[in-house]
Length: 381
Image (cartoon, rainbow, N blue to C red; front, side, top):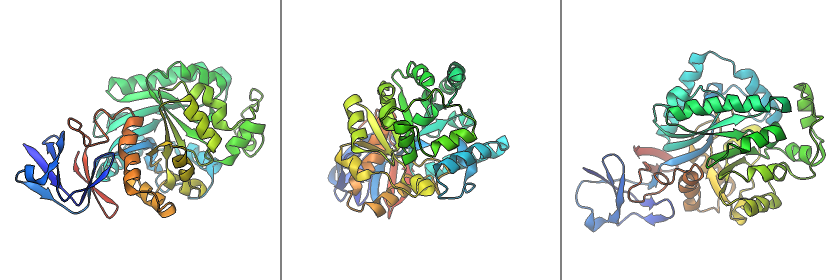
């Protein structure tokens, strides 16, 4: 039993082709048989208007924060946003689970088939264990007390173990350059192995100021949270270049947000790492800081781009196409095929899921999405 799809255009995962004489054929379970000429496809072809695409990969999400939808006002700035996140985490477990279920259903309805998901807790484990979507759980660690680094690793390893016992990929990852001590970085790097490692990167100018000169508003943030910064010494480098000697040990690395990343930062990463990916979350950047990542700079430096939605604490939707819409509004010259590549094959490669996802290659099971007027319909899971 086969399913046969013909649409106005087909995005294969690498190129956008005219669909007038092309038919995508999958097995009943969604496994790709191939793209063949119309004359060879036989009967029972489903014809439709729009673009056929592999399912989308949401390379950066915080599913466990889904209960915060609409709770944090937009445009507060990063430091106030982080403060609100901490305050709003403690709610009834039932409310957290209901929001997780709803958010996952929304992602599926919007054509998402895989998610790189930040996990500070095991709140998402029950839903992930159902395997409705392919998840890569990034067990995120942070602490600015060097004496607690070993305890943080042990706690993270227990969360990682429980995800893995339920057949959910998981790795221990740092939160951000400014929230991880050298002690914790060094212990974390021993667990990088063959995993994908994510890192929130350069969301504000203050982050770079803190590392370069130990000045700026981050000092006030640490003072309010009673963090003793005697251990920290300015590096004279950007935050990213300061942690790159350890981050470069990652087998695959995803740098997230990158709002204030420079050409020198990008070049340093590319010189040090073969599998670095740069995640764009434009709607979250707009929601928190009213900024956009330096997309043209990243493109000019041949960066491997992927797309993320961030969380419902910092976005109006969990929809990859909504992210592409925002990019198109700010950068209308970028070809649609290029952006779809970021949302499909690049994301699959970043999460090391490209053996099965990201493109319409024979034997893969990437999902089939119909895109019509920047709206997605999942045809095959």
